Length: 307
Length: 330
Image 1 (cartoon, chains in turn green, purple):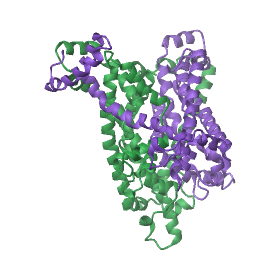
Image 2 (cartoon, each protein chain N blue to C red):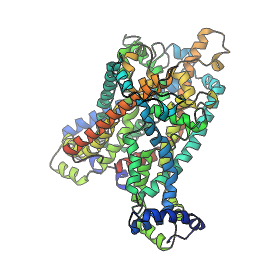
Image 3 (cartoon, rainbow over the protein chains, first blue to last red):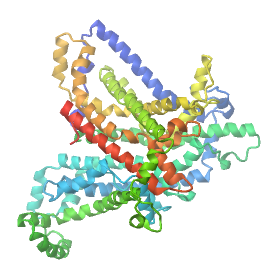
Image 4 (cartoon, rainbow over the protein chains, first blue to last red):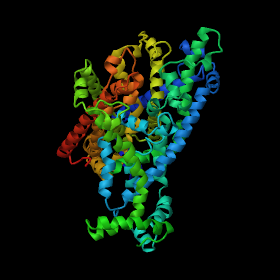
């Protein structure tokens, strides 16, 4: 891991650039600047629109900066009971789901990293086979249904309680970071496997727990499909399903615009609400993003390490 | 017993010993000693294995409903066998070829656009001198990856809106439009693929950037001494250096090719673009779960049909990769 994070000093040269290299550098900067604008502009446009006056948004006066800034859309959003309920549900699914995910992933990843585990090959195969072939949507739905999980909070937590991909990167992490000598020393001291996992492995697992927690949490927070098929009670809906009805299915929420009399104003506000919703829905991850970005990069790299 | 650390150990051992005599008669005593010594590891594995059994292998067992006429009362094993009827029905359905064609085009298009661009981005970033600029591009480039599918499709809809959308606002400047992008089936594939590229290209280059930094710096130094230009160094040093990573990622992409972005397709579908946006997965969802009369067996058969093709694909691709380059998944 440590080599890959070291800066690529040599290739950024510039000591004796040839004429061709100077052209290359210029073109490179231009291309990357265009790339930056293409990524950034829609995001800024949405942010600016969300805090602009509704009529300015509708009449196309917003280009980059907000016009007649107002927070009316945000005030409306935070008044909406369905959105707040969805937000709280999503927090619940994400926190509880991720905790279970991380525990199960460690419990699977650690034993599978042990070379002295009899039957390791078979158990590993049982895990890996599911990445090649699985029952598919309908049989999984029937199982969830037969377990009586339909329309319960468990349907959002148990079916995705483990991801084989994460088990594999966790196993790889343990194999590369926990020296065999530590285990041998502990075994000579008569330490049990449970004790070794808790006293030795756990303190060394910080990075892999962080990586797992982040990937699982983003999955829980961003997912909508499980909720779509397993849940029918709106009281259990996660935020993404509420967002889907407003952003994708274009259902104007009466709680938010119902009190406005003019039809035109109401429509303008409905447009504005979409921009504000996109911002609000992305904010939790965008706030966390600068802090966790490093871990995500690490996760992507651990994942690629041993495939 | 080497592990006598905890009191639970002594409690749990007796039943294992009893079973041990059964197993011990078949396997060598040494293996059995190892198994018994590792019982705590098996206890750790028990919950994950239970999950695997319930949520992966039970559905696999349930796949047999594809060959049965499933009804809830008789359950998975009680429903009558009907052989390949469900498969025949799917193959002879009026829009079978259209669904297959849509799936193939969308997958191949996504891959063709989404695979090379992260490589190009990584190569470009790797030759940027100013590190603050590089860091800014990376930071901004990774961000869209974390936007949820629902919000992403929401962004696509508002940005392309014919009345208030940003794109039509810009097109208006040059006197074009307004264009109703989502109201025209002809645009669907482009919108789907390029919004996907917008979202994933930045994050996708991470692995290539890592591969590039692990290239021996002396190669570049020697090439600079020999007067090689940056383009030559990219072609002869950087590209060969990331080929192994690229092949592994290509195998992974190809093996998932049939299920590319199904949740996003579902959100972007509307009655107007259904002729080009209906793919196998959305069709399974439509006939199996979204319909007022869910046809579990028929939908499961279509799902199995797709899984088998995907399985064949990944084995073929892996074989090919092993022959061409010395890289493979197994």
